[in-house]
Image (cartoon, rainbow, N blue to C red):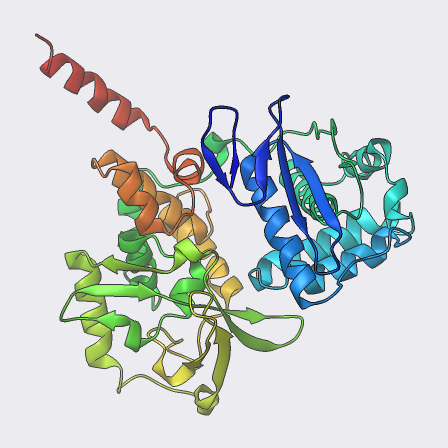
Length: 392
């Protein structure tokens, strides 16, 4: 068993060198010693696990003569193939539109920081900061995998940064208490009212709401379980079911009284609603927690459109919201703003951030704090009052 410089066990095959870095090593089936140095223990363990797996199951090595195009194809189909479909789609889009035109034909061993910087520089005038950040992450993740798999010795993005600012947290839309009251009063006259109201009571993502089925609702225990999402793929013209965004997104949420009332009303009306013959479809998806293939029965969906008898498409919700905002006299917002609003109200009402992280299905508490928690004027005023009241 290897040890660090303080004598702590690091696990078989890993030890700390005098310079503070960590050496991972093992002997292959052919008797060849393989080793590599890393800055952190997790990096060393990941490499060691991958290398041992490769040694046991065959040679999946990629020749260094590979171009970036060839490496991307191998990486997207063999290394990150178990990521959420939307994540892989984002990687593909950023590669096709921004990365490939600049470095796709280069040999991967010849890519240097200046090439990666040019990818980002070419986007400066026409892309939003958030899209440039996505490209930076996609390119960085792809090359980091190449380093970990011994395809290249150094990460070609070392020292590369993007400069265009990403939308600040303060720019992320959420409703004030007054706007929320006005919006709900207006939305109450619409057929989508209960969808909007439920998002404000649970913080579900839009895809989680669309894919919600009755087997995930327990009215006796007053809980709602998230285990899948559903969306309409406009280019392909079909509905697709899939796993939640991350493993942390698998969650069971206790229902508020208002959420319980909404779902109970819908359950009692489920046999009276219009249902299209197309609801006989079933959609297969993978449960990432178990690896099993599961089936979504569309006729079992909680929400379907009152007029078509089919689910509402993702984009149709936003279109409808814009009309309601105009009618209510408030600034337009999209469906995701209702999730932001739920998180904001939760913090204002004293919900602990760690509990909110689990309710929202975030893998990281930092995401909850940075992206969804906003300090409003009202909450600052309440904080000052609490400070005064508790003064000695």
